[in-house]
Image (cartoon, rainbow, N blue to C red):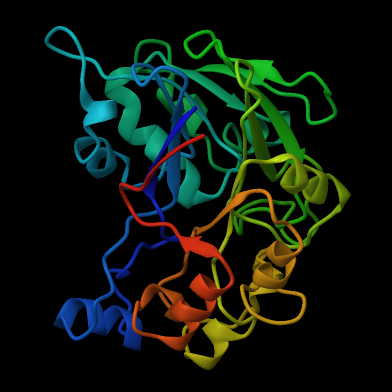
Length: 305
């Protein structure tokens, strides 16, 4: 299985266009070695020729143009993207569905709950029907033990894992999310058994999450905030990370502590907010992540398992 990180930042990217926090300013001014990052998305393939995008960020055009694996095609138009999976209905994971309209029709895989949001509260799917009939939406059952396959990548098996997080701010289910509003993905290469577990938004590690992490050869996990009150302390918001559905990276119950219990998988943090000091390679927080045997995702990062 081949994996490419299209975008590694949280919503807004890094630097965020209207943010003047220390981290964003240091990138704009060139006073730190931190690298810009686009909004969170990955792509997976079983042959390096056909790719499935997982979460279509607002930066998808830029990400495809920066990824030769995805941009190549035969003929005057086309790409190597054969399908899209979205793990939730958040704006930073679905706005790219609008950008991909020139490539429709495309298969889109999501839960019924996410399909409902994308047809009502945020009606992308209804809008896109005006382009070659729109997305061919395939809903997935979070209770299925068998998972599903995508025809273009027949050697990969996708298993949805229900996550404890939050529904989008525009959703009527905000602060009372339903099972299916947020999923992680366990992706298995059926030829080798190699397994990726991808969970860019995680509020609490429940039993199914722990089991998926235990089975994985690579985990790509929520790295949004270093501390729960980070946005409040920076004067950039009024909500705790936990209220938004994100487990902090630091702390006795944080993501690093959680990952410490698992020795098998390659460990990667993704979906990193512009305020998070781990983005600064000279920060003690960045070093603490590396010392824990954990990697920090960057745009263009490639992994093969």
